[in-house]
Length: 269
Ligand SMILES: Nc1ncnc2c1ncn2[C@@H]1O[C@H](COP(=O)(O)OP(=O)(O)O)[C@@H](O)[C@H]1O
Ligand SMILES: [Mg+2]
Image 1 (cartoon, protein in one colour):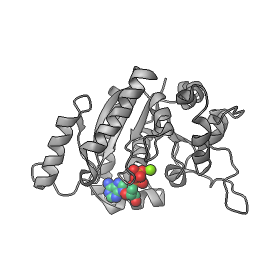
Image 2 (spheres, helix red, strand yellow):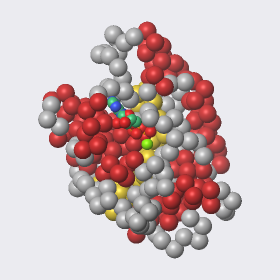
Image 3 (cartoon, helix red, strand yellow):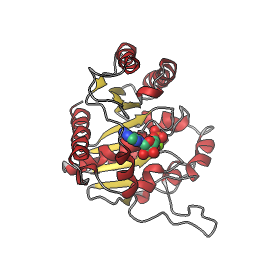
């Protein structure tokens, strides 16, 4: 039975999609069967790892079935029918794109709207070891659906972007989901992405303060180590469809090991 994880943060640009892809890759390299569920209308995870580009009409609109088709009211499409191969062995993808934005509006008045993703995902769980849901930069109905479908939430943050207020909002959403929709939801922890500088000991005063704030703020969510450093090659690797483990330089391949450590933490939790 798959372990289901949502990468969350309502801020855009902190590295949710990048983390999703690198964790998926690290898990697949370990021989795990992975499903990436792109649950963001921006479709960044989809463009990064989809093997065959989504079919579009002459206006450029997506015509291929995506996750939106499986969760819309009166859907006739199963999530299994939406699944496509990724560029990497061992990783399947539930693709997404702009249709998801419209469907988010459509499911708002629907019955049991919070359970749409959980319900359609359930039949697929026996096929995988790990399901990673890449959530959108908001705390709306899609993120609530992702959290309702998950066993654990991984908070992805950037030291520069950290704000206690933002985390309070996210924590409130998690508590809400735990209370009403998914009692078993817990935190994996907080993954610090785009860490600038060398070691934790030699961090800037500001970064040290951020780390202390995170530790103090999230009692139920441990600060995960190692931090993922800021490296432009991480973005490049995603753009080029190259796993960090396949990258030409040793320091980058070591970051693949860091992601593998996080996969181990996830699987052990
Ligand atoms: N550790 C990192 N070092 C350097 N750039 C990164 C890192 N993680 C993510 N990025 C870049 O930051 C941008 C935002 O990342 P993304 O994963 O799309 O964030 P989100 O999904 O939270 O919006 C992308 O251009 C990505 O390549
Ligand atoms: Mg994203």
